[in-house]
Length: 429
Ligand SMILES: Cc1cc2nc3c(=O)[nH]c(=O)nc-3n(C[C@H](O)[C@H](O)[C@H](O)COP(=O)(O)OP(=O)(O)OC[C@H]3O[C@@H](n4cnc5c(N)ncnc54)[C@H](O)[C@@H]3O)c2cc1C
Image (tube, rainbow, N blue to C red):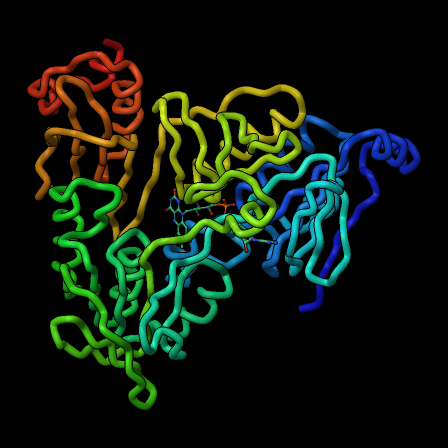
């Protein structure tokens, strides 16, 4: 697809008035037309009708949300356009210059300009880096075979979906969110599924092992074969298939192999420009980097969270949207710090898992509801305080757990565990 640039006449101002305002105001250039970049543009336009906004992305689609890619869209239950954050014409109608299929190659900070992939340059008054993450790749023989894919973009889903057929044999490398959501869609498509992970249990980075066991049991009950504490030696070609060779010596013939072993922040532009980075572009609670003209937002940032009192990097829908809104406010001069308690969700089969909080430590789990019932909330405790919660098919508990975490008031385990005790009342303190 050729590069496209969409520029619209102003809808609410005359052409002349708009051009005058534009020349008077600083141009905001946003690099990365994903969820976070889009929310900066959308919010900034609503706060500042006269500002020139340019949104540059290297994908072919207008900004879209990624969560449905590994859920309804992969399963064929929803179309690709259902993931679009706004309809394609929104950007032109709102005077946001959306440039798709274009990649920014370099930031020239001394000239406040960017170099694009065609060699052209563009000046900025304010720059926002919203470059997101890319999937971590396997560094082993056979990682480049045609059966081996990652799952991050619409283009990935278009390639993968065709392979999900009854009787298909598929392997997910990595038992994180992507691997497990992929596994559930593949099982429902009639495939036989093996999930391999170097860790001893699923979702090791984000949830307690006891909750992960419940999630894994749901998969096992549907026939998924887990190989934990196992690494991949290599992937060999075998006619139309690939054979995944495990550290145990087992060989898994596969029609499709999905690599879901985490993501790497796209910090290259920032690092080359000399901005401070540490597994993410370092920003404050307003999304500002160490260059006052440059902000960063979304998955690519290591940002300061005032609620947690520490910096962290998040890969989440909530963070992409709300940090995007906060950065737009900071640019528009109505700055409020971005301060959300981290929240994620995952849908696997008919199970909805929600995760609130990002504790660095907890000393026990209090179960509210029996794990085997498939409907419960696991409450993470540190001393007498609630520090996080996971709900399974029990989403209504999440906002009360959030309140309990934020309140920080001591709560007895017995009250939390007793389903007849109102969490809402406990949260009110
Ligand atoms: C399959 C999948 C399922 C998910 N499910 C959930 C979920 O259920 N719940 C949840 O909370 N989160 C989920 N997430 C995470 C969530 O989607 C991400 O956190 C969010 O998309 C991050 O948005 P972003 O804009 O920061 O980055 P991205 O969405 O990665 O967007 C960055 C964009 O910038 C582009 N770009 C990078 N460099 C350049 C450059 N130099 N020039 C131009 N363009 C560039 C990239 O190609 C990309 O289009 C999921 C993610 C994936 C991949």
